[in-house]
Length: 118
Image 1 (tube, rainbow, N blue to C red):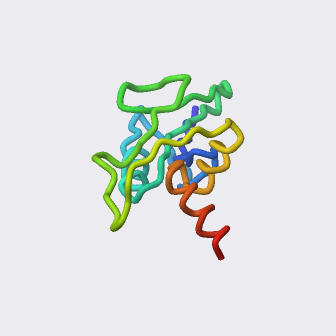
Image 2: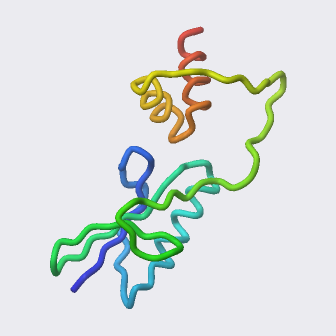
């Protein structure tokens, strides 16, 4: 029985090599997910077991059917001239902004506005 774990970004795209898990030791995958989160990428750990094809997620509480998202901790950094604003977006715009911002809607909106201004 082989268990393989992979770190995925918010779009379910692999952002790590596969980790072979032995004796339920997910520490290597956890370290990779924590490092990616510290670098600003929202991510999760998905694993699959070869013996029965089971697929699930891994987080601090163990195995789960829903992903545990690893994210950078703390208050977002402030930017010069920045101001918090409330926006109302439709579902499609949220998906696009989330993708553009690698899981961060605000970053996605800023990128889209920058591209539109060029």
